[in-house]
Image (tube, rainbow, N blue to C red; front, side, top):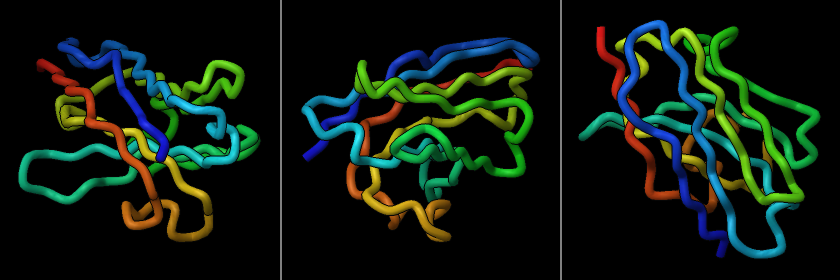
Length: 125
């Protein structure tokens, strides 16, 4: 088990920025690749970004590339998502997730083994 807790969501104007954080419990954080997804009520989870266990490799959805940055600090058991130039269509519940593999299926929710509860992001136009 890898308990994950997201924070940092809130209300921001279009064009603004937010920094989401995901804190993991336990001593095995560094063996997991981490991802961020977002989900609207009643819809599937959409891939946002992923980062390898070492932090050397990062991956982004086309819709956020150049605006969002994923990073991690294995000493602090945290993974962050810096979101800049936010748009109304970025508004969703954002969830972090942990996975043991990070192959081509990294953009699918089924690739991930553990999930946080999510943090809400609202973007006003």
